[in-house]
Structure formats: structure tokens, C-alpha cells
Image (cartoon, rainbow, N blue to C red):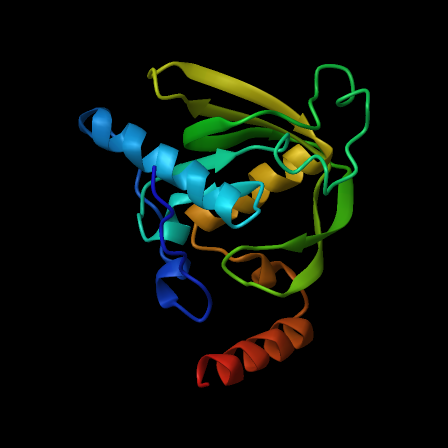
Length: 185
């Protein structure tokens, strides 16, 4: 496995929408990519990573909240009813949110593509995500808490949205100005 270089703001490739994974994409190259994405995520101490963050514009993301469990407070009951708050490593292809709660939750988020910056973001508290796994099987994740937040954050990446686009224009402009200044050095 290899650690892949991460795209960071202000790289405009982060704002491109990703294409679906098609039948012809399945095979050893896809498995190598997803293994490298997991390795890259772990190396950078993340809990989720979208393929666009490593320069691949396919609807692929990886998530592992068990890896981050020593850094995040995750409830012992692991969710509410059928909804899970955490999960081990999972490869998610062509994800779509098929259900989301009306209740919103506000939590601070960070991003491997926006290193050093954290901002408070409001998102649906619970979601159901349909996706395809590496065995071409359709699966569902009923997620709440940190898992729901992480999945929504990674799905945003696949749609060309970085979490800073979900904060106020004033906060976003301040952070982007700092990023622009830092990238000139």
C-alpha cells in the first residue's frame, strides 16, 4: 500500500463533481486505489477520505471511525436503534443519501484537504446511505452521530463541496484568505 498525495485548498480540483464507478472500473486497480486511500487516511490521521482528495474523480470514499475512536467521543451504545454511530473500515462506491432526518445536529468539522482549520457545521442528525461495495453488492448504512456527519462530509466532496462552503460567508472568506496567504509562502 502507498500513501497518496492529498489535494488541499485552494486546489480547484476539489470543486469538481466525481463520476460514478462503472462495471469496467471494478478489478485490481480499484482495490489498489481503495487500499491506498485507507492507508493515506490513516497516515494523515483522518476518519474519512474521498477519492477526489487524492485526485481521482470517481464516486469513492473510505471511512473508519474505529480508527479515530481514541480521538472522538463515541457513545457506548453505538447509535440509536438501527442507526450506527461508528463503523470499522468500509469502502463506499456510488453512495447516495436515500433518507435524512429533519432534526439537525451542529458539530465542529475538519478536513484533510483544509489542514489546520475547523469550523462548526449543521447537518441532518441521521441518514441512510445506499452504496455499492467492492463485491458489487448494494448495501445500506443507517448512520447517526459522528458516522452520519463523516458520511455527509465525504459525500459533499464527491459533489465538489468542501465543508467550508457550509459555513457563513464571513468565516469562509476569512479562512480562504489565510489559506491563500499561506499558499504563497
